[in-house]
Image (cartoon, rainbow over all chains, first blue to last red; front, top):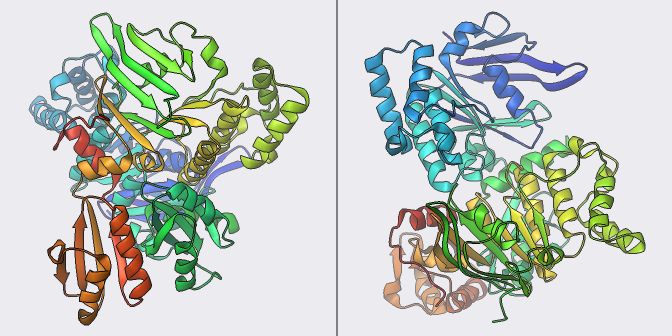
Length: 308
Length: 315
């Protein structure tokens, strides 16, 4: 088998409206690939297409060696998919939900016991194994939905914003699970959390249904055309407001201890001049240039899309 | 310190045997941005519903902008604006029609509404979408529209319950600029979020776990207590090192010499440290300063994990 995901000229239309594509995407390695982009960029449509849930048009579209244009019954068995609004059996307990999935996939019971035990342990759901799914908190439901998708050890795991509205502790458990899975599976995940985007091995940035950029977070960061500065001082709100008045400042926000100031890198003043300007702002003590973070990286991509 | 604009004492809510909120004490300064954080199911939403008069506490007291919320739950509504995760705009109505509908509820109309909406429309960049039906608005526009509608009647306190959930990074950044502008104009903002970096943009952070407050302090204070602290790297030539040390006014053993300069580890960046860094920037132009701040996500993991946890009281 060649690439795990191989898409050429993929398109998805709803009537006259094109929701996705034309789009090319090749994913060959087992890794965590983040699908990012603004709202409406096509993230969900891409993930659903790859999971074999949509009728698509393409010059070539294979996932785990199955043609998306053909019979995808087999493919669906090999994929673990967690949609944005997933469904659990509310009146079954945690462990019964898992057993139900195992039966659908004809998982042998000794293998079920082993996998279920591991997943319940890693999700922190073990103490709640007998609780009805309907009585779980939002974060626990999310973890159960993911555990369900991972139960049959799929080669491809597709997760659509699995951590939206989930607290930091549960998010970190979910990421622990995904990190463990990537040894034997390709994990495709959409997220709007910056720390999660930064933790992906590779990012696919979508805009208007097309791939605008693809690369490791560090690669995308290095290509960013924005300068990021921090202005430290006692009154970051005041400093931030003053920074907005500088003509070359794109955005400024007060943070704990400093004002976070974004500057367009092209055509602006030299770095030393910027640093001097910033250090003289109201409430400022001193300014530093700081490595571009995930937020600026994604913003720069979004702006590139606006001007494209 | 001015009198708190939101003040809850021993706030408790029981549902049968289950105590959802347990003896909460909240005190919010006027004009501040107050982050109210907690895990799913920790009691956040129950607390908010009690603060805005939608749910009667089992025990305790709540005052918002001088109104006793338990005695006069209806009266508090003129003082507050509320925006939930699911922005409530009426489908089938245009944005403009929604605005007029909500303005009507607050008795706002005529020239007063025209002036108020005119300025919000411009500041929130909503002009191009006025005629669009609310269901056709993108998540980012809908969210700005929700905030505009919540502030139409110039409330003194804004309650925002996960306002940035499901919103992309571009619109989240823009949204926080708007929130900070509101706070600068004197509006008190009470906000919940699961984006931990957003706690940075707030003046105060309270963290609730299983119905109880487990942290209650400004973000920098939490960082001081629940992280390994700041690291300051100064890249400087060997012969300038001692000059930089003098400018920093640091004890010689507070800094560690490195092949490229020196490194200091500090629990916080106080005024003295900042003054020192300012001197270095001014007097040693060859020196490059890099500050590493422990991320908030890490801070909250520690708070929740109970590492070094003692309740951070405001006593």
